[in-house]
Image (cartoon, rainbow, N blue to C red; front, top):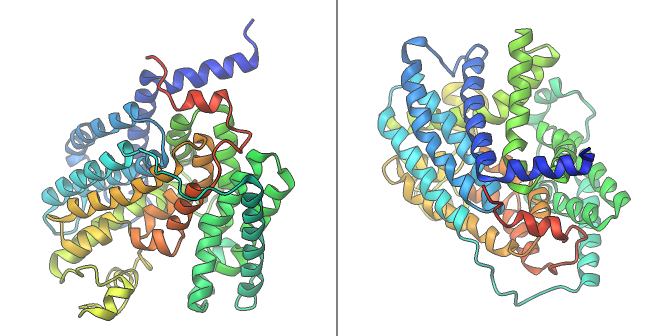
Length: 446
């Protein structure tokens, strides 16, 4: 009789093998496209028609060959971020076939596909570690974690004097546009909620400090009544889910399933109930399948349409450059999209902002390559750390990268700070540095 631990180890090994990963990414691609078909029933800006379905299927099948890179690549921060960005571009290529917007859709699709490939090459395969010139001792590193907790608690306390409202998710939009924090406080909120506290949670949990890890989750939840964002409300639950998932599965299969499982649950729930978005299944489908995935993909469709007939930004949307150069736009891009299309403030990923908006579809692949080299710094800074720790500590950032420009992710949300923390932390201090972690960094035999 096979023990439960033996069964789990067998499942982990099979999913982490090349055939297992190939099946996972193939199923994920299918779920992504099926989800978008269902999303079209609820969102007016996403379309579907049987007349073009086989064209869309052919494009999705051809592009899904890119997913084989995730079968051969080893796990890294770039693996996690890259798979989420692959999902977004696959969604855009599907949406592009049915789009009602007038722009060079064929060339836009080719540009997006090439952009992803050029981004993935460094993001997946640049992993050589940096030479650690500064390494904190374990005692100093734990002092640093304490300092992060103090800074985060102070940020919550100060920010709550500007806004603290206990309202349901359905009513956050009644108050959110009125929020106004000082610039320094906005940065602190972004750094602590997106980077510092998730990093601290991963450290405390894997070090065995369960109560401190729980305190981190409480601090993260307190950002919800301050910022009134769904992102803040669900971050604690997301970190718990990643922790559980990585306990049972290796890093690569965990990265894939972390987005596949939530999307599959939403698709099945809405397909079986055919409910409205006001129902419980509908609200889940709206949160995950629509807002987390489909909206990120459709933003690229909208940005392609807008900048097909409007001047490019030449990166002037970056606040520092806007001061130094002439910019044809004085409002943020998200506000411009709201004023033009009426879908709400529509932030978008690096493919839409540093790519389409800044340089146009023909040069966008070059900015994607540059972005991939920037994100690959995270691979090099985290080399030698437990894959499980890297995944959990950076688990919030893939969602950030789906929805904001790379410059905003690096600076406002503290991705650059996370890279620095990975770089200086002592290797081998976490209890998770065991034989299982070592086995996750090698590819099992197929």
